[in-house]
Image (cartoon, rainbow, N blue to C red; front, side, top):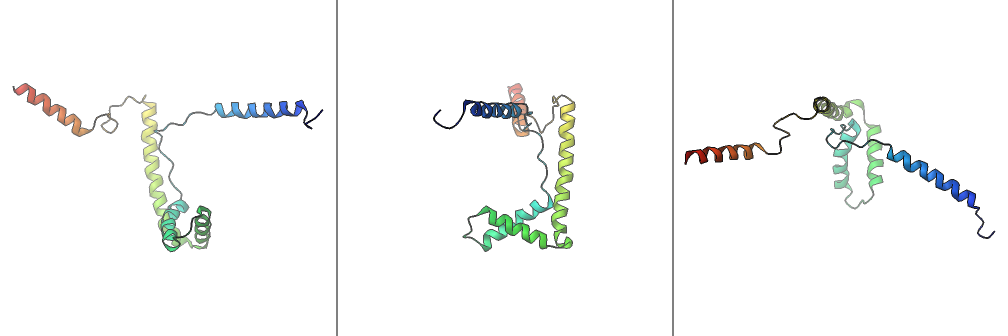
Length: 139
């Protein structure tokens, strides 16, 4: 046989690929309305660090360099230096938990709540229509 590969080896590879494809299909779809998880204290720190690093190194084009420098600085920081970032992360976490509770309540309630926030029309549009209806009644 020319070519060096047996037909059995290709069949094995095909079955492995088929297994991987079916595993990906079984995954549940993500809900786009679900609130995103909050950033940790390190990522809150990295938001500020990226801006500072960009100002100090404007010619840097490597994302990995920013990440490595940020990680090294974070490790070298004391707990008192990390405290403001931890406080911001805690604040975001509380806000996330609040948003997640409201999201879960909407899911449990069937999602048919008539909240002003979720209305298709903004308040100004609703008020404009009410004004038009009143003006029609006058004539």
